[in-house]
Length: 365
Image (cartoon, rainbow, N blue to C red; front, top):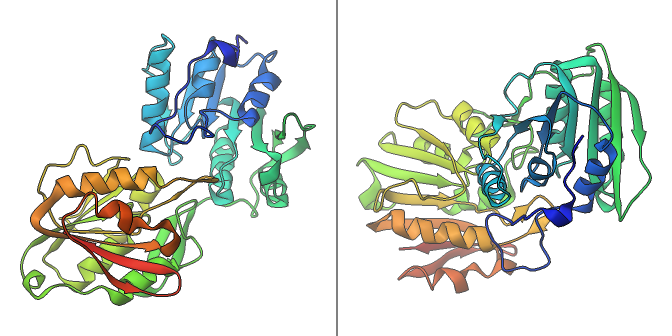
């Protein structure tokens, strides 16, 4: 297999960041490349190739990329173009069926639910010779990785550490058993008539405490009641905030936006309204100016194992453009993020409408 050395590949993060400590690949991904260098594989499936290091370094095999983030798609395509490689790649989602998986590379995600989702998808499309190579930085290792892997594969082995990275190598897919999960949709709360979501979506253990605080403190203005409103649930997760709005008034039409495709798919499970719209995107670029009367959000600042508020601040700028002149933006955030400093540079009016020991709720207009 022809593996291009990382020194000969140009890779950039997308979205771009001012944090110079963040790079577009990890030693774990390089260790996986080193492991497969002398392998022969007809068709390689790539999972969690966040910025395209595998797409750019593996040169002579058929590749299928299982994408989870809209920003991931864009990062891979831009890095392929930067390296003179066609950006026309084969893309599938975790919900798609795979066939005849020969070799799978997985960068183990922070969410072990999502890791299991990946392994189950590989297992359904496996043959007796299927091999899955799972890479991770040693500081993120959990025994749960082994427990999950052993549900689906009989042969589970660990590599030696290299530059603080290791591999789990999985072979001999098991015959399907009762221990294996097949639906990958789980109930998360009984509120709002019941909420469910796909594995790997934010706050799978129940309603996030910041989101709950926002719902407890939020109220519609008098002028917003009994008139058609266009609302945006930004970074929607399973769509709890959008559904919360629709429970308050039948006249509210909600657009759900999230970077994660399983999040927007989960929101669609929870809101089947004809006026609802679901968009998997990491920006608001495709939405018109002055469209929304109300934007509501519990914006992210965790991205896998990284903390980064740059993405959220970029989304705030998009909100300012999409918000009607008479509209408002209501969000909840951890106090230590000090979002008010950034919001006041974007919006004319920013006020703190509620706070507790951990969270603040802002209203911007």
